[in-house]
Amino acid sequence: MAGIMHLLRSALNTLWNGLTQISNNCLSTSSDLQKLALPPGSDAMPTIAYAYDPWPTLPASSNKQLFFFHHRGQAKNPFLAANSVEINPLVAKLPYRSSIGFVHASRHWDANLDATRQILELLAADTSVTDMEVKRGITIGKLARKGLEPGFEHSMVLATHYMFPAGDKHRTALIAVLMIVFFVFDDKAEETDDKTLHLFQQDFLRRLEGPSRSNPPSTPLQRYLDDVVRGIESEDKAGGNGGKEMLDELRNAFHSVDPGKIDNVEGYLEFRRYDVGAMFCIAAAKFSVKSATPLDHPRYSRFLKSFSNHLGLLNDLASYDKEVRALELRGVGQMVNVVDAVKKATCLQRTEDAKTVTWMLQLQVEKELMDEFDTLLAQGLSDEDRWFLEAVLVCAVGNIMYSTTTTRYGGEAAKLGKSHEISELLA
Image (cartoon, rainbow, N blue to C red; front, top):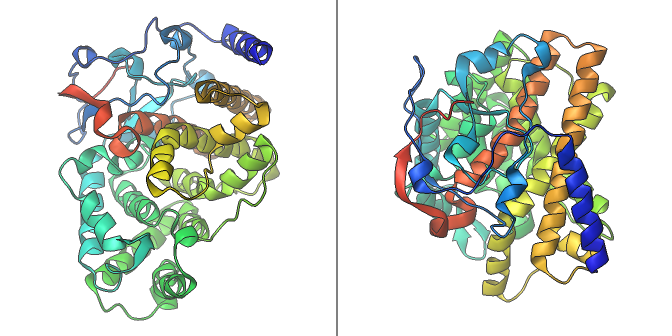
């Protein structure tokens, strides 16, 4: 087994050799977080109060070499230029575990925050869903109320902030609502009895098809969701067609997926690509840049597959320790995580070694993602297609930034000694 780890570490070193050296350290201390100038026209930015490292035993030197996306000689994406700021998490020495530095934050934090608060308040108050059990006695109402507890600006709301920064103020707010719906109902189909799920599908999911396909609204939540769907349809008329696909993929994400018997890591990743809601994220990225690029075009299949693999690998790495604690607390259940799949496939004894191997897979996927982007760029891309692919790439690295700074995975143990205003980490 020591030989396997030696080969894997050698592969990691080979992978790093092709990357550009950017920073000499990555471990975060609160004293490194400095307030920087806010660009004109931006909302107030969130503070960074948490820095979660899912594998703190990884040597600090592992993040010495990173490559940054330099637009490959092309004009900067106008949607990113108008609606986001490019940031460098290593300026703050955050434990940013990636080889890609193309990280952005939305300028429309207030719009995101207000939309998130509003949908959570409506979910918490709506009698048609508040008593609907999501899993093991936890209801939608309880989840929504928990989401509104003090400090909620460090939780789910950060996902939209970092993953979809190309959207204008209105599109950002619309994406934020759907992201909260996705988070609140995450794993619902796996955990809910058929009768409850049927009621959920009949009203909630049908309402996402549009007001003309659902019953007349009778609650503030239903009216609000109808307004959101109408807003998305209106935005599609103004530019692109990603809104409809975003709604379609959100509904698809709620269908139960049975992993079955998985014998290898590729089989697990194939399951996870669907289960993680990757196509919803791709459609939301497309919506953010008003694109009409066809998602099913064979030309982009390798790039989008790499993105989907990246999303699954990163989410599983970030959530592994949390899932282990939850499994130990319940005493029953099944671990469904790529770290566990890697551990079984390689016969590794130590979880930390399996995490390292999984991270190396993440790095390899990042190289594939960037190589495929360069290949597509060399073949020739329209501005609209390039902006879409860049939005997907920003979504991938934004997911890393979100996972690092949210309370969702590390909890209070990841809290920094002092919160600092970070409006921009200048790239």
